[in-house]
Each structure stands twice: as structure tokens, then as C-alpha cells.
Length: 201
Image (cartoon, rainbow, N blue to C red; front, side):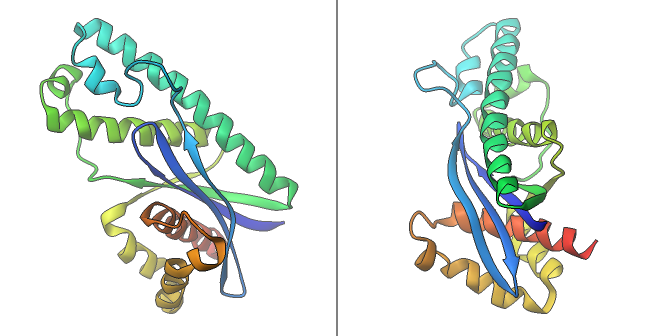
């Protein structure tokens, strides 16, 4: 079977997912979609920590746990669909890449909810962890790559071909069409790092 990898860049309530393969030095986009991990119309789910700061601590904990479980279920369903379609096309998914933030360690919930800046950090971690857990549920190996270090990581993994491949990723929008923003470019590059590491193993 041919190898593929999945890259995901998360936002609040949704993420940009790209599945890629590479043949003869040419990057091929196999799937590209917007993955919703919250349900429209449900209060607070797109910014769960913002919503939770107005609740008593025990209620906040319960609300966040319920949001996490529901979001993980949605993420798993979307990933299962992607993986199923790739397998139907004779691709084996070598793993997934999740783009990470700063990696700052979060304090206890009470301290998070007391800081607006920490609430934003926690929400970013929340949705990235939702997708990471969904990948693990499907036995997909998860590689977390810090976004600010992605270029350096990609150059190390891709070696002498890194410059050419990065340029190819940057201009893929001409052939695959919109959207081809930073979301899709970084998710693709992260997936290619996973793909390269799997091919070299």
C-alpha cells in the first residue's frame, strides 16, 4: 500500500485537515477539509473556557469535560471518514501531525479561569488535545510539532529536498484551488514531516 499522512491545524471549534502523499518528489493532496469539532447552536462550546469562567468551579469542570467528550466524538468521526476513504484508495495512513502552540504548561483550572490570557492558551490546548485523542482512538500515531519551529523541523526531516518541497507546498493552491492559506500550508508541511519520518523508518 502507498503511504499517506494527515496534518491538522486547529482553531476554536474547528480545524483545517490535509491528507498528503508524496511520489517521485511530488506532493499530492489526497484530502482537504474543514473539520468541525463543535455543534452549531450549543452555547459556549466554541470557546469553552470563556464560557466556564462564569460558572462555579465544579460546574466549570463538568462543562469542560462534557465539551471535550462531545468534541472528541466529532473529531473521531471526521478522522474515521478520512482514514476510511484513504484506505479505500489503497493508502496506509502512517500517522498524524498536530500543530502545537508554545507548549506552556497550564496551571489548575481555577487559575486558568482567573486569567484571560491563560483562557486563550487553554482553549488552544483543549482543541489540539481533542484531535490528538481522536487520532489515538483510531490507532494513528500522533506527532506534535510546534508551529513556530515547523520550518526548522521540516528542513531537518526533508534534508536537501526541503527547500524545493517547501516551495511546492507554498504554491500547491494553484493546482488544488482555494482555500490554500496558512492553515493548509502548515498542515501539509507537518504531514510531510510525518510521512518522511515514516518512510525513513
